[in-house]
Image (tube, rainbow, N blue to C red; front, side, top):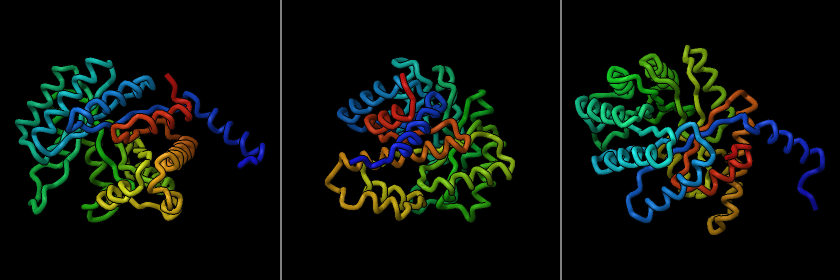
Length: 294
């Protein structure tokens, strides 16, 4: 028994065919903390590099050990794979002189792209000395970096209002950022409304949607709570009863991510940033099905 009528299958196939070669992807990784995690990371990079991403990014920890790992991995990715590698750089835990030194080191190593972020505030901390806009200005003063910044379709948890959050994003763009990459989300209409509001505010750079393929729903719930991301009720229902069924969770996660990309592509979105969590299988399968091929 078929799940689809013939005309439904044809519509789905046509929609996928229209995407073939029409979208660009980038991937995010995080620094591994153990030798086993490092092996997993490089296995994922080796698999996903075949999809010819526009760039790959590596997140940035709030202590010197993780910063050093990010620096090392970024340079290794560039040297070993030839991919454009964009390190995350935060300003919450470094002085301006330290940030200038890091920026010069990256530039002299051939690293031209940076994801510029304020970074998470330590517990019970006072008002930070620097914000993302200050970091963008500092980087642009050092060299002509290609800079990505963060955007929040569902509003940053610390923002006073949605309008204040939008004004903050515009300031980062006006300071020289080349694009914004969103926090992960599942409300596609919310993203589109946010994009419209960006345009009406005078933000004229690409707002790249961040796509999180979900294989672990319980982990997602924790992430969402920390980042002010709403999980739709329909999505919760799709994962009900699958706590001990990883294969079915992967199928559900792939289906949701592909539907998001298909809908967004119809609305003119061409670039998508995938949060891989250092795993390649789900992201590769999604991209392959959407027509992103070696």
